[in-house]
Length: 427
Image 1 (cartoon, helix red, strand yellow):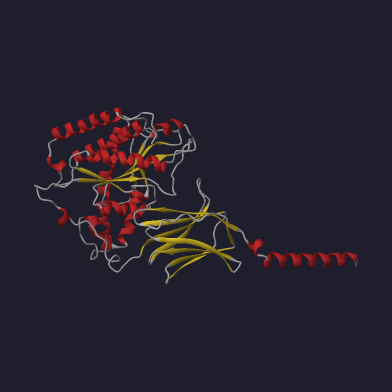
Image 2 (cartoon, rainbow, N blue to C red):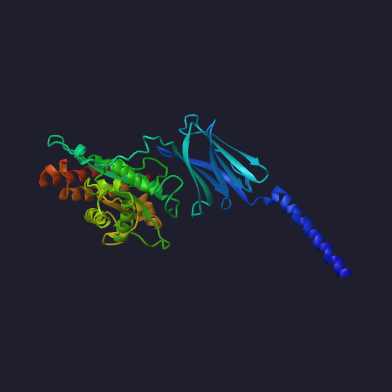
């Protein structure tokens, strides 16, 4: 009898405890907002909400006034709202409040109607759980029309108006994506951008050549967007700059990559899904009216030629880099990197060194070493275009002897620049 009464009393206490847990919102909370930050790029703002755990959320847009609403279930706020400049392109204000004792509501007041995309990111070496909201200018009917593509007829110059060779220089990572981080906290994104800027300056000094930076500051650009920027600039080559990392800190040396055949095959399927937009990849030939097999053959031929050109250019670059420092592999490597997947632009990814190696990390921070890398990559690019210049360009018209003298002038100018640089100064 006594045991039965004790069991009944214990059951009653457990019942009361259960009611307390369910009714008390403090106990219902299982997530925290640790902070809100944002990164701006020329056409996008990414708002990042740092969280303790994986978020459960709803998002929607309201008008009059325009705002983006995020309801994060069972979440308390334990961070700071970032300062928003009045001149910000998209954001007026960011605010938050408790909603129905169940959700924390975050409101992003926007300047007019904007397009947005919300998604969660899993933790990495630098950050924990994150909820990302991307804001972009709202697409109009005009911007939703067929994108601009290369037009051979419009861009073909006359013999007296030779066009420049355009090289798209892509600094890897950026913004909330730091890339690899060295032992002394050097971030790959900063090294890549510094080398990319030096590479642009070197290329711009070459008569008949011009470079564009895919990323000009510390912000993130999606991998597909990087390809799009290069194609919109009508680039003749795409060079992506990175700094490798490995768990073994003794591993060292530069590597040069081109797209693998498997990566090309995957990309072919994506482009064939939209034949209208793929027409410029095969010299302006429309694929709309082609049978599936013929369309794939035409696109595969274009991709094969692009990979062949990429490999020849990469070999030149690797040869020049080997004169600057150690190389990790003595031959060009193949990989399925997304940024290498443009079917009609020779694309190369340069891993300049292993930032995880303390000695190479120190060199990567040096202005002198960065200049040497930029010079080596420039020499490789110009030597490739000496052998394979695009038609109707300055390099297609000059003699080999004249070209050789200009390449040597590049080396002399670089030495002069280095002599003016504090060799111990970190970028």
